[in-house]
Length: 153
Image (cartoon, rainbow, N blue to C red; front, top):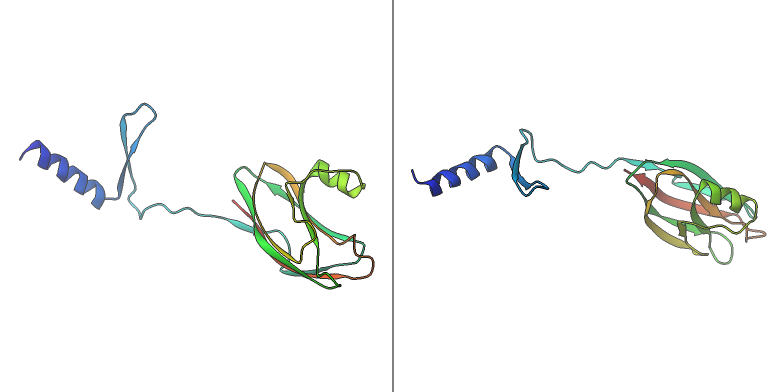
């Protein structure tokens, strides 16, 4: 048996037994054996808001959530009610949520503007965050919200 056929046989065995070749940082080759099926990325998803809810005129709906490392907020929302069928959606950290509640200028990770629908897909830093559905600009009309927004880890 030649060295070429020995190398070919080793690669076939590695493929059959679910082995994976990878380059280590020192440029040497390392082998990881996975006796099960190939690994799959598992994403845990935590809903942040109910699928339907309402926001009263001159009010906001706010919910707090904790962001571990490597988490994203993803989803969509739609508002109905009033002449514009609109809502403002913000995602802020704890300090900026306090400032928002006090009517002070604040910064946000996400600001939809006044829209009837939107989508969110943002990476957040670790810590406490809030998602806020703001209807304070509407003096008379409640807004019906449908949303599918989750924290994905």
